[in-house]
Figure (spheres, one colour):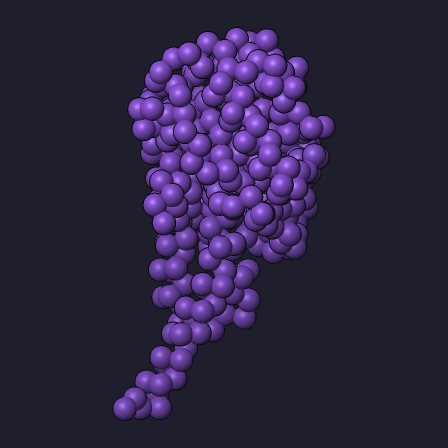
Length: 300
């Protein structure tokens, strides 16, 4: 039987675990938005847990305290992450975050793949200020405390960041049924090389980005324009190695999309940016190092 002191200690530890687990999804999204890597974000959150579990005193505002830890750990980690990006083979895309695995689910924030790419152009402090204040709705004084900067300086960081990423903010929303329809229609048309169907789906200035990380075949450069993409998919449809199989439609970084596998068993996620009913950008992630979470999700 536990003594009174031991019972209080167990109760305190249980409360501490419950407080952290309540914040874990939010912390994971923050780490991912900061780093563009779900696996690295999980490492950051695990480190935050180790620090949280070692705190002896009570914490009045667990959410703010943990947000500060994850932000600062992410800022430290971004130095090495950015160095690795400089030597990355081919186009770089964030790890796909399947905020929902079924078409009737939605993500909780408004950060899409397009905005994630826009965030890459910001300095680490600008990125942190924008995400904390504009996306995660942290009050400016708390953002300033987290970044160890004066509120006026943080306000300027957020304003500069906002100007840089404004074009990446999602303006055209699709509901769950429409997202599923668009994803399936594009998959079928691109698989079959159906240029008529593709022409009805794609915008004139559509872009395709493909990330293989040097591990698997991917397009090293951005492919722009409707005509080029129509020729690309028409040519691919007759090649046996390309014929993909649709595994699941999904919401990927807030965008309609799907998970597929080609005849060689290479897994791929495809996210589709949509504006005014037309696909304006296609993001294909094929690097197996970035798809471990997706593979695990499919195995469940």
